[in-house]
Image (cartoon, rainbow, N blue to C red):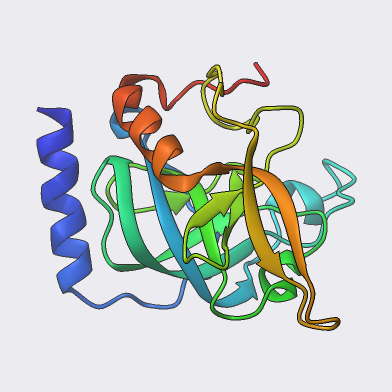
Length: 198
């Protein structure tokens, strides 16, 4: 029932106006659900600083929270997301990573939503690259993506070919196939609220 209510709210929000987000949203924890999706980030901007950082309650070393204007390329699993929506998150590096790879970069992300607000847990994103054979692949550190549930990535050590644009030479990387991970995520949809770092 909870997922049906969330889906209805998300469909209504997708059809309506989407004003520019100004403050980090407070999610209704009773209605929070998780999603994993493949997205592009079309724009980023700073939100208002957290009140605890401005009133002296805390010393905050980060820049203000970020808003990311996102386009869903593929919904993988979890609560249904609108095609275009705004994500709130925090980032010590002011979200510069979203410009390192260019505007067409694909990102695998985890989103928390209560049907009205969308939050990406801190650094719950991973760049997805396209190799010379048009296969989507994901490089991983320590055989794991820390913000996903713990899986046994037996297929981790596949070789994928890329082209160095500066030298025009081919090189290989060890990575996992995006579609293998997609299938694994869909079979573990009930565990999206868990992280391997926990």
